[in-house]
Length: 128
Ligand SMILES: [Zn+2]
Image (cartoon, rainbow, N blue to C red; front, side, top):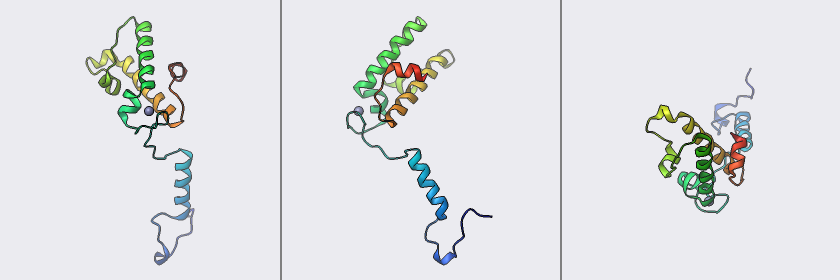
């Protein structure tokens, strides 16, 4: 049994059955799949580079990340634009933990952006 009543071919205008179509719309609204072309914090055009690298608040976040990593691991990492976006690609197997933390940090930034929140390094630690 179908969850919708099939329409005769001549009356069907939508490619999706009405119930399915409504369900997708509800799902989109629930998941907030909405086009955001501006940064929620500074109103500049939202790009991958702006979100993860160039925005001043996110630069402050990455400074906190570097300090935290260096203290915890007795290490010195230099996060530049490329390593922030792509991770540390030299000797990947030795950088697995750092790259994992970078991915989680970017996930935190992305989620905070979608929720309209500021980026706080302490919130990332709780997220981690
Ligand atoms: Zn911005």
